Image 1 (spheres, helix red, strand yellow):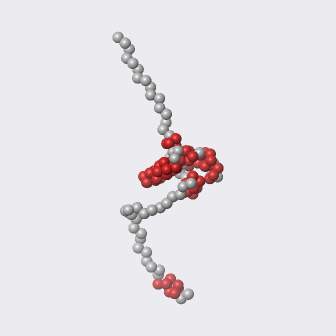
Image 2: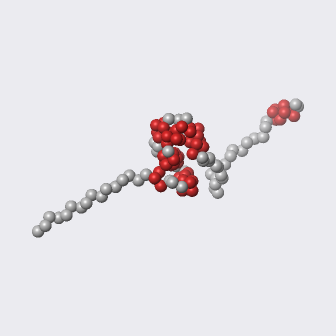
Length: 125
């Protein structure tokens, strides 16, 4: 009778999406897909992934921010300012565009026209 075989250990390496972001069209599609999900943390992390794919050290020089600060800010746990996000995007050669969705859940409040006092003051000028 032979001893039972031990299963071989499977060696794995952590998945790093930055390794696959080697084409501009792929990067733009990746960022747009993550942004469409609407999760701010995922969007920041995706921007960080693109930054790592492009080279964090050169991005740090372009933005004037420290490399370590960028790693921290652009991680999934980071909370960068909007200024930082726009600066990083610009340094990477991207900009954000806003467009209306098909269904808008926001209804602007009814605004009153200028008060009669203000209207009178404006017309007397």
